[in-house]
Image (cartoon, rainbow, N blue to C red; front, side):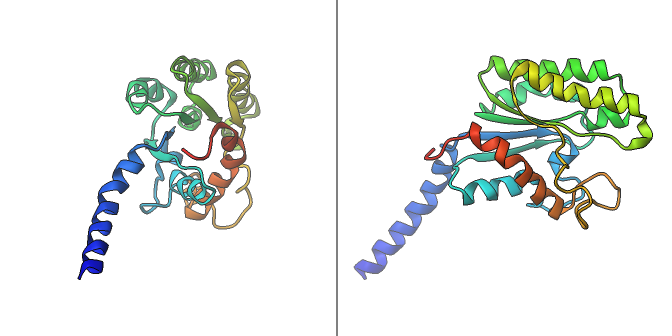
Length: 208
């Protein structure tokens, strides 16, 4: 009876302690648009979910917070900054710009908004990984060149960790893009997480 009682007490202590231990984990925010949000996917299939699993497996004890919003532009990213800062993240993956490009917004506007986001995170002493993306070829070579250059210039200016093309490892891999031709499938999300990991891990520490 005593053994059984000790087991029950231990079990309940674990249940009570687990949320507290999770709360002590440093926060890694994935801040972006529908690619981050997991548009068209089931719960647990977004790239932030895959990233959480990969980090747990490698012994990095972070809490990955998915702060993605479908349809969000870089203007929305600026508007949502306060809510991100209130999470007190240690690291933020910034993944915005695709919707600006698809709407044909001026590259200068995208640059200004992303610069505002990165500056605010820097001022809060938050580590940053900037994730870039490109556009379909029908947007024109000159516009696409300016669009892509924005990410490179901002990464250099702010000295951030940088992945120039978040889709680089899933291009031409079957089953990685949904039928809309834009958003990743669950398989694509897993690949995106693995694409980000080598650049992200130097920003992290184990034993948290």
